[in-house]
Every structure is written in C-alpha cells, then in structure tokens.
Length: 193
Image (tube, rainbow, N blue to C red; front, side):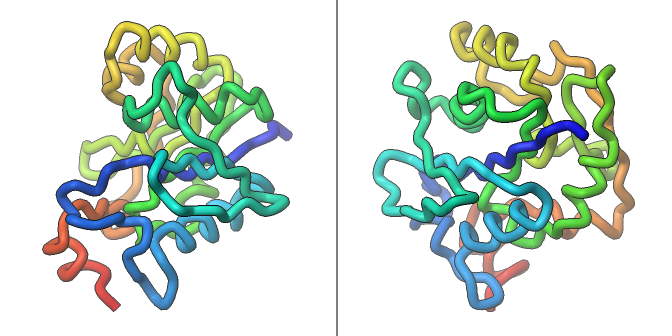
C-alpha cells in the first residue's frame, strides 16, 4: 500500500470573507477543526499549512503545523502543497482546504481508491468542473510544482496541464460536498449553524 500524507491548506487571507475563515463555525466546530477531522478519518498523518499571522497551534502526534517555505511564502495553495511535499514523508499527498466544510471522508476515500502508478494526480470532477484543491498528488510531481512556482505560474489548472491526471467523476448529488465558502453570503446560504 502506498503511503499517503494529508495536507490541509489554511494559508489564505480570507479577504472576501472579511475574517479568518478557519474560525467560522460549522456543526459546533471551526472550519479548520472539521477539515482536520475529515482528513484524519482518511489518513494517519497530515500537514496543516497555516499563514504567518494565524494563531493555529494544533500540533499533535498526527497533525504537523507548517508554514510556506520562505522562498515561496504567500504564493497560494501551490506553495502550501510544495512546502508540505518538501518533507518527502509519503508517496502521495491528499489535499483539502479548510473552506470546504461540507466535505465528507467518503469523498476523499473514493479518490484514494484510484491511486495508480500511472497517474501523477487524482482529481474529482463534478458537472465537468474539476476540483484541484481536493485531490491527490504524487510526490514525483514536486519538481513540476517547483518549476511552476519559480515561473510565477501558481494556477492549479496550469499544473494539471503538465501532469498525467486521473479524473474521478462524482454525481451532481455530490456537488454539495465540494462547496467552497468564500463570502459571508455563501456561509449564510450553505453552512451557518
């Protein structure tokens, strides 16, 4: 069995949300607590990538809190993924952001079931829209990710264009689990307790 490490991304500025999304509440927990709980239902250990000014100290035996490497600090999700992969702790990295609070373990476990030596990435697709921040990336992709960051190409879609990707189709009924909360309006509509 391939070794899989989690990466929970929490480095965003939350500018459209008007406050740190990590601390928004859903079902009695914060977004970041939910994200870590879902991730640890699927893998044994995870990196929790936080921003410089985030007072999140969830370090435990299974949760390793890290920041972006200095050379790529603040360069978005790709920098967070690269910074976690740089530790070379696993063959595969399962990525999920804190701002998809409706995500469930079965979604991530389904992606894991598609691990294959021929793929560089395993990415969900719903209604022909891909979800590159809820996905698996092989450690072998670290060189391509580094090249993208050095070139200032931080788009996840640009990265996928350079990889061999297995797309996993989910039904329209599963779309709710991938909802990304960026604004207070989206929060009120989808997840407010």
